[in-house]
Length: 179
Image 1 (cartoon, rainbow, N blue to C red):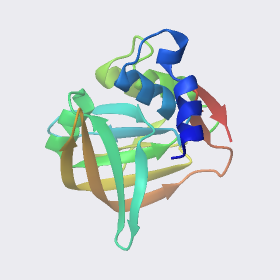
Image 2: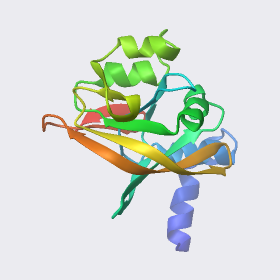
Image 3: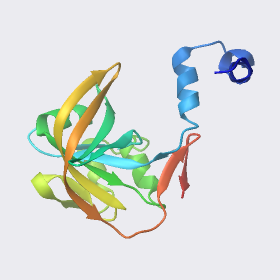
Image 4: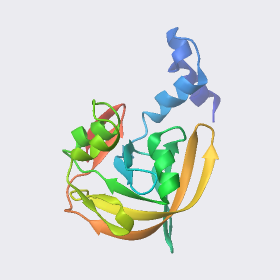
């Protein structure tokens, strides 16, 4: 980075505003400016039924179809996903903000009660599939790598279900936006 860029970054950081520098908070603020598609990661099986809202989802390879998700290692969903060995990634569309909030823990709905919200079906390997998602991937866990406070879960895509094509939902600057 150039000195000019570093100076500009420093001028916009929390310590410049008098809030005091804390590396994690600065990083979270920076990442809030990175737009991410909004997904519901869900799992069901011997480890229980669980789900959460995630933006940390990425394609890894097309052959074989592989993707990754990042989950807080202490979450109920991470524990269930490990035990179940399968999960789904359900990409949300515009207008599904409230469902995203339910699975993000921003409502009183906890645990399996979250699945009372939205139109859920049982898909391949008994996994929960959101019927009106833009796209749903059923995934078999291939590898789990712990990194800091999170798990990087790499999985092989078993099935893909396409919903109606319409505007997607992204999260940036701590708010939902239709794109």
